[in-house]
Image: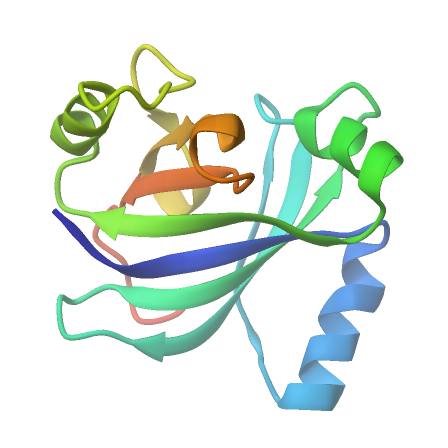
Length: 146
């Protein structure tokens, strides 16, 4: 069962400049940064709030590390902006199967490693009214890290 909005993914050309905009404009601070070589992105997670299920809601800012990454291709076609929405779940495997059984294409056969040690998969945007949708099972999280 999906429990919350885990994050909104925002593609950007310059991660540092975009982080500074969200910090200066809204007061959001960086909770976590990492480079995900498999997905070809450098990212910053900005924590918005905690949730009753022990998770949190974030903005995920994504800068491609290579042009042929999914985010790099998306930026070249669409420019900066909202890239995807991610829903939190305690069971990414089970929820992906259940959603797949309803005719929605699941993009990964097995969930992959996502931000902060999470397990993720994506749902095809053509089956989700044009929205690239991610399912996320969070790893246990320390209070703050950079």
